[in-house]
Length: 374
Image 1 (cartoon, one colour):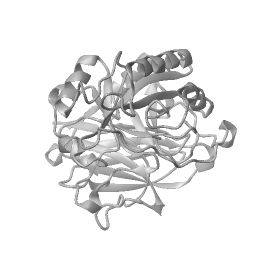
Image 2: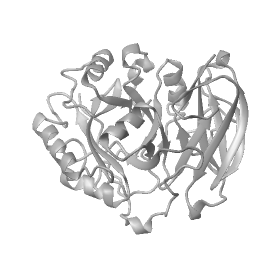
Image 3: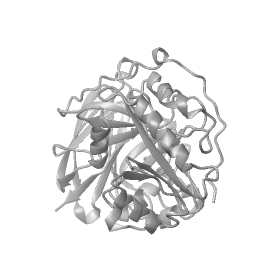
Image 4: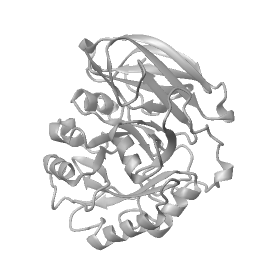
């Protein structure tokens, strides 16, 4: 029961000074938190990556990331996966790199089943593999008892897709995330061409309350540097392990594959990841990437539940560097969740969904969902 084959693509290594300046870290629509840029899914030679784990955390910090995790695979009998000694080694490396208030280094692991799928787990004292957790139900029980948090990885890539996202009520709270960007790919419609439903649609309709993440899933040695790969923006009160975990549990984060992006959004004054009353819902969206993207035309797509793909009741034209405000009627009768997708209409989605769907353009970012109440 082996993990996926290692990636071989390499990108030109840049320096932090070469990268886009990016936006300021303070929101223009909320107070009390600061934006940190995170990459929560990375590999080393301890599983199927190419790089020395001793170099990974420093590489990600020098690339401008504020939060970084090493999440090598756990498999069966440590074949191409973590052993207990290697798990301890990553823990020591993370502790040495962690700089509370400035840089958060996290040890995690990627539970890896070739059919059911892969799940990242963070903030646990130990790990589990396919010997100890051979099914989704056993994995969920382990996560629930561990005190950690977890997320669905590259959803739709493995055939059984987490038992088609079959809901487990006890695991709803610690299952905080689902990757919507992995490497350079947008997973909104992954598997659509093969007859599968949208992973986002299926996951949220099943009852999961996952936020949305972007990750680089780095398998080479350029941790943190390649432009165009997924990353996660997290809104924290301070940059520490405890507060990063708290923000993840609150689903107060967004997914993007653009460095330096700031995205904050409220629905009736409630931030992404929260609950709001249905009806005429007023959204405010703070979207910025600094001078490089000032007044760049973008679209805000309101995603709602559908049978196989999200419906889009409203598309709003906006400009980067501005705060957009709009109202859309949302009924709980149409489903309990809403997500905002930011897109660039000048580029096509490399993995399109239904013909004519508004989200067949290039995804820039996704908010985590809001959940509606009566």
